[in-house]
Image (spheres, one colour):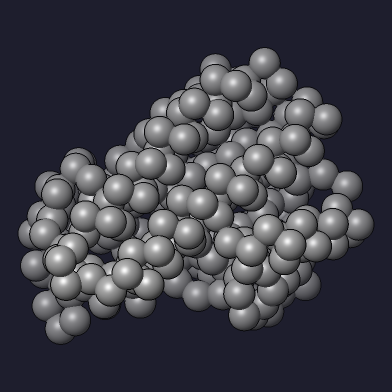
Length: 231
């Protein structure tokens, strides 16, 4: 993509920061995170925003549209993961995953779709997961939130398609980030062995899939989920 305005959540570290750094080479990128930190680049605007807090979210949206007249692409990337059997999981960890992984992108997407409808164009990409395919013990809540986000995206795509908006999902097999380290600790091969391609997702593969979804020629590509890793 080039000469677009792209909004990325979870932009302070990990995959989100990698995407921001990649797209800032040729685009204006807005990175949202609770800390408000992220890539140091002339074309990156880092904003502090708790997207699970409606008041904070609305103030952030107002700030964005004061500086940027339109948003071409929204990438719902922010997520938290606590891999623990359900009966041992703390209630606050359950609520945190539901709020961050599912409620927050729903609230943000609602606001972005309204704006995109006015401009009669836009692309939304939800970063989902292979977790609900694997049914790995400990991932029940995380998998449920990502599966919910996937279905949410498919339905919103139908609702918004007539306004020139596409919504698609990219299911990351696994990426070597801090989130992955929570699961694997010192043994990443135990996750890699679950992936048919037996390798972690690379940033080039991830952005290539996003670029495909957001191509000017992708008008009829919506409501789709692409799984990396051969899942």
